[in-house]
Image (cartoon, rainbow, N blue to C red):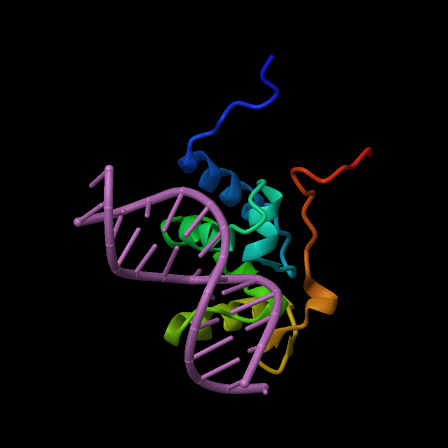
Amino acid sequence: MKQKLKKSRSDIQVHMLAQIAKIPRGKVSTYGAIARAVGIPNGARQTARALHGAHGVPWQRVVGAGGAIKLQGELAFEQRFRLQSEGVTFRGRRVNMKLHEYRFAKAKAGRKT
DNA sequence: AGGGTGACGATCA
DNA sequence: ATGATCGCCACCC
């Protein structure tokens, strides 16, 4: 029996958005971490792709590796502003990941719970 | 069917 | 720390 149906590529984005929506206020995650959470080890770009066309999701809580804001122009400014409003602290131009990195349950990790 | 693109990530100079 | 280059994966034309 199939343990896992091949999900449409579009579904992947839906799953990503679902994970992003789970990030609690005051916390942030990275494109790569979200990708891994849905089973795509190197799909950081797909996370960005999903966010680009998404709506109603806390996109501000998604940052690049190391807490770097990958957006440009006003969007970068807005993201930082919104995060600070949620209580997220920065360390220079990056989010202080030591305090705000949110950990997802990985999709394929050998976890036994 | 083929080629270019991107809200990325890691590595190298 | 900054800039350039390559690799990844799904989307768009």
